[in-house]
Image 1 (spheres, helix red, strand yellow):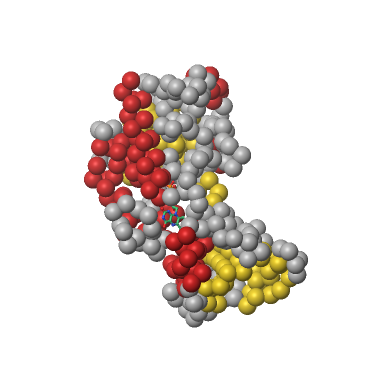
Image 2 (tube, protein in one colour):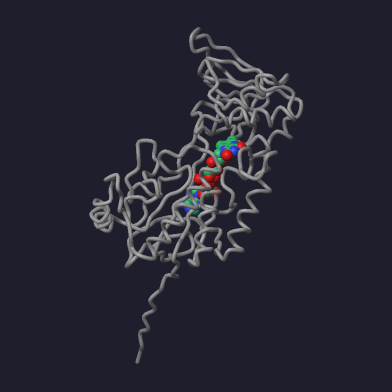
Amino acid sequence: MRIAILVHEVAEDFDVVVAGGGIGGLTAAVHAARMGRSTLVLGGMAPGGLLLSIEQIDGVPGFPEGVPGYELCPMLQDQAADAGAEFRMDELTGIAPSGEGWRIATGDGDVHARAVILATGARLKALGVDGEERLRGRGVSHCASCDAPLMRDRVVGVVGGGDSALQEALTLAEAVGEVIVLHRGDALGAQAAYRDRALAHRKITVRYGTVVEEILGDETVTGLRVRGVSSDETEELEVGGVFVYVGLQPNTELLRDRLELDVDGRVPTDATMQTELPGVLAAGILRRGSLGQAAISAGEGAAAAKAADRYLSDGSWGKRTDGSWGERSGALAAGSAARTAGNGGSHG
Ligand SMILES: Cc1cc2nc3c(=O)[nH]c(=O)nc-3n(C[C@H](O)[C@H](O)[C@H](O)COP(=O)(O)OP(=O)(O)OC[C@H]3O[C@@H](n4cnc5c(N)ncnc54)[C@H](O)[C@@H]3O)c2cc1C
């Protein structure tokens, strides 16, 4: 006689699952764990997010001289682990309603969360010109601290005019021979601290009203074809590398089927980081209205943890005074239950 044994896989249960190991997610984890909530961080392969490769992070409280990303990010991770958060080198691949909470799909199976903090951040946008994909990693880069040593004494291009572009141009200027900043507009959008230093730097020149049309080279980058916005004339510049900082693309594609995103793909929240879905919060630069700075992402992570704790204690959600989606949340959650699971400032 055969005996059939049915094994039901029970997903591990956490009070709070944090998706994202950048400063927003790690700060949320510190605070959630300190409030006694069982907390899992899906931190991806290298926690730290965008900050990990920044040579000198400016504007973080307690570090008046700035702090390298490779020092700050492990400190944040250690702080969250010491507070009791569990880490997995895994990613959120889907989210669906499940009982009194959410089933979180990961690369290594599902977990159950009573509350979820989305902190998946953003990635640097590509220029979208010929040669860019072909020469990525062979002279086309988003990381000055990683690739500057390979371009010692050479001329390099930096595309963009905001904080990230000038900050990275200053990092590059420490190692390379010359930096040409190529900016589409006629004035730099970066904060004064970076703008003044870059404009005064003997190795940095800024070309305004200039767009890159093609990245040139066979094996590695050898030049750029650029066009003057007002003259419409093109010319070729000889460079050994090009660093692209033309904005950020939020990492929210997986959430599109579950949450209403704004036109830029960012997650709308209220001032307490609550999304339209009960028990789901969002913090950091994936959030609509994010101002882009690390300290702000950290603060939003702490606020999200606080709101998650309150929700887990008394179930309060969407009790707004401003009339935002408080009353819609129930209907939206019910609607989203019917959908399928998870197929779904200035720095930039
Ligand atoms: C070049 C540059 C320089 C900067 N310099 C400064 C500075 O000096 N000072 C400052 O204040 N700010 C600076 N910033 C801004 C700063 O990087 C951001 O404010 C900060 O990184 C935002 O943190 P975050 O946690 O929201 O997102 P991120 O840093 O983007 O972290 C999100 C993390 O989530 C991960 N992730 C993505 N998808 C998933 C998923 N499905 N599941 C799990 N994890 C996922 C990502 O891989 C990433 O590790 C700089 C930005 C850039 C681009």
